[in-house]
Image 1: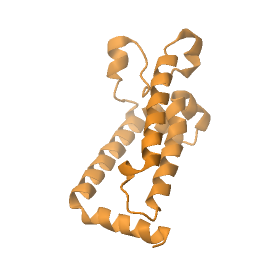
Image 2: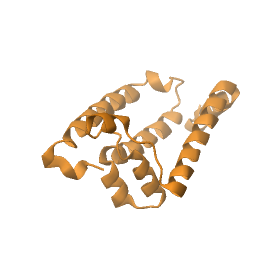
Image 3: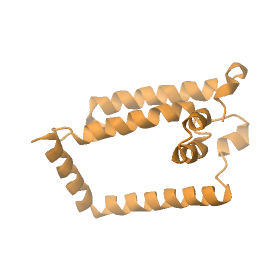
Amino acid sequence: MTGFQAFKGRIKAFFQDRGKVIRTAVLLAVGAGYYVLYRLTGLGLPCVFHKITGLYCPGCGVTRMVVDLSRLRFTKAFSDNAVLFILLPVWLAAMLILLFRRDSKRLEETRTFKILSIVSLILLIVFGVLRNLPAFRFLRP
């Protein structure tokens, strides 16, 4: 089986699972709706962690990053949330590579997924701590 045949098989299996298709469609619709609302009104969801503690979480700035990416403002998107700006293309590339794998292992069973998950988690924790230190103010959104 070629990589493309494996990809076709995974796509076919995905669309045969009606629940997955519905959940994915709902998630995409909610995300698109939130994006349009933010672009039209500038109103976004506040970070609860920041509201309660006054500290920036690793996810602070993600909405602005996505909007800046959609406007092709890469420097601004990077300054909104540097770690997720870097992790996003890494995860997308990993997902594409895993989709074209010849074996039938599920994504969660692969060594690549486990390593990437651990490294991502460590980076997010370190980034969350650093962006709240005075010396690393430039990491704040």
